Length: 446
Ligand code: DOR
Ligand code: ZN
Image (cartoon, rainbow, N blue to C red; front, side, top):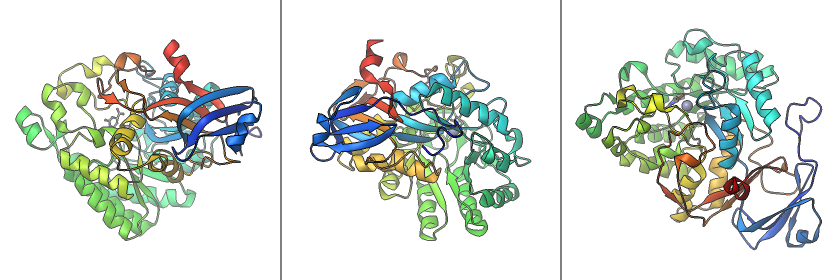
C-alpha cells in the first residue's frame, strides 16, 4: 500500500476483515484459512478458521492464486465507449480473475500525454474494480514519426511504466533506437507490436494454405519475425528492455531462444487465442476470427505452448480487443482485427496446461500473475500468497464445467472467438486489496 493514502493514488483497501476458509493456495496441500486485514494477508493456516472476521468466503477446497495481471488489453476509453469502457472493461477483468491490467494507447485521442493517462487511471481507481494502468504511446498520435514525452507520462499521477504503439509497429529502426535510449534513462518498458508494415499491406489472414484456399491476402510470419530479430539486436546494442506483444509464430520462439541465450533483455507474451486457435477457423469467413497478428497453423500453436512451458515466452496476455457488431459482422476483409479475452483466459490456460497434466497451478500463477507483474515492475501484484503480502487474490474452481456464451459477458462487446467452447475451470472470486471485486455466486444471481 505504498501509495495509499498519502497520495490517494490507489483505491482504498477494504476497512473490514475478510476470511477465506477451506482454500488451497496454488492448489497445494490441505485446505487452510486465510485472514485478510487492511488489504493485506494477516494470517494463513488451519487454525485461522477460529479467528473472527466481518466477512467470510467458503473456498470449497478451491485454488487460491495471486490476482491475475494482464499486460495487454484495450478498454477503448476514451473514444470508443460504445464498445468498451473503463467500467465494463474493469468488470470483465474482475470476472476473469484480474486485479491489474494495462490498457493500450490506441484510444481516441491517443494516450500520448499525461492528462489522458491520468484520466484513465483516476477513473479506474474511483471504480475500484481493477487497477487499470494506462500504456503511453511511443510516438505522437501513433503516427510513427515523433517520440512522445515518456518522462512526463512516467512522472504523472498515472505513473506510466509501459509504452507501446500497439495496433501499429514502430517500424522505423532509427526511431525505435531513439525510443530505447530514452526509455533506458527512465527504466520504462517498450512493448513492440512486431509487424513489418511493408510485408502486411492489405493482409487479413495468415499467409498459408488456408488463406490461399479462401482467397484472402496473407500476412507472412516473416513480417513478425524480422521485427523481433531487429528489436532483439537493438535491445542488445542500446541496452534497454523490449517486450514483444502477442508472439504468434514458431520462428519468433526460435528468435526468443536465441536472444535469451545471449542475455538480451527481451521478454514476450502470448495470447490465449494464439495458443488455442488456428487459421482453420477462417473457413466460415466469420469476421470474429480476424485478429492481428493472425491465427496461424498448428505447429505455431504447439511451439508457443512449449515456449510458455519452457519460459522462452514469459507470460500470457489477452490482447482483449472489443469491437462492435458493425465492425465484426461484415465481410472478412472489412472486419476489424481483434478478439475478446479477459473472461476466458484463465479457463483456456487451465485447460491447455493444468487439465492436460502439462503443468500445475504454480505455473499458472507464474505466467498469468508473477511474470507480467515483474516485467511491468508492479510492486503490489504478482506477489506470493503469504503473510504480509497485499491481498490481491483470485479463487479458481478447477472443476466447474461451463460453456463460453457471448450473451453472458461483462464486456460491452460480443466478439468472442471462444463461443460454445467447453471449459473446466472457473474464477469464483476476485479480491483487490481485501475487497471482493467479483463473486460468481452474486454474478449468477443477477
Ligand atoms: O487484433 C488486434 N486488435 N491487434 C492489435 O494489435 C490491435 C487490436 C485492436 O486495437 O483492436
Ligand atoms: Zn493489442
